[in-house]
Length: 387
Image (cartoon, rainbow, N blue to C red):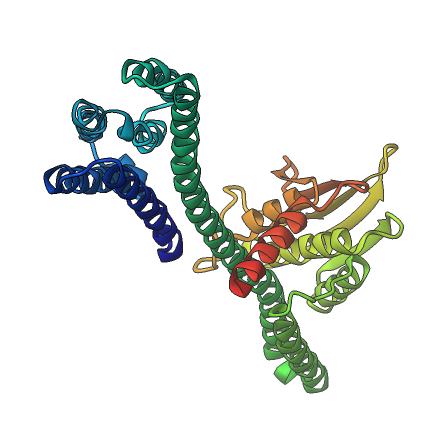
């Protein structure tokens, strides 16, 4: 609860206290009666603030404090009689705030209804008794409403803070995922070309220089793409990535071909499937000794897009093809998250012929759900920072 809402709760309680002091002192002569009323009202003020603050739910002894609040509310009727009929409103509000619903509202109704016979027993007329009932009901609801409004304000601030933190976490995850998927592919292909250039250095120096020039261009492109990642505006294309992968694999002596028959794709779907191609080629180069690679994309009868990247040369145990080769990582997990965000699914399997198949299926008409959630979280983060 912020200082402002705490101040409002306290000011309302003090307002009731001042009004009660004025009403009670005005109707009783004698210093003893007046001082006694002020002391009791001060104690009631303390109970009201204690029961209306955010700390009320953290105190296991609130039933006893509520009982004491009730005793101090109704016992003074023996001394101050009819001038005390407006005081039970704050106690009724405390009952609403501390007792669990629906019992709190039952007790509240009983307290409000009980004001009429109590006022009548103190020789009040019909109008005075009705006024006592209304004063208790309104006073209790005001105390309850102000305290709950303060609670809701604190909950809203906490929710906005949580949304902002989630937006930041989502952006961090996006940046890490994009960086992994981008640099993993680029560095794997660059390493492959460097190994090829090393083998060709003596046999074919001219081709070795050509391969190193391509590595230099690839590194520069990776640096440029990395700068775009930070803004989230990196544009990727399935067709472009497939051509790049086929060219790189063929240059390394791996038979590769691509057959894309899926038509025009939405930008977010195009980027996700392009990422699948990148990650599939990265994993292929890291974990196998491929001789062939096939990239296929088409649509089924329902309009769903299916992308399959297949390669041979997979070790029988499914582990790295060479000692010391890297393994593990979050590549497939990242792809799974990306495809779930656009309503797709990812499957990976190895057949008996030693081929590995990475398949991605996405409904062409599915909505980008994660993008919507991220946009909402980012909007909440901006609203929180603006506030």
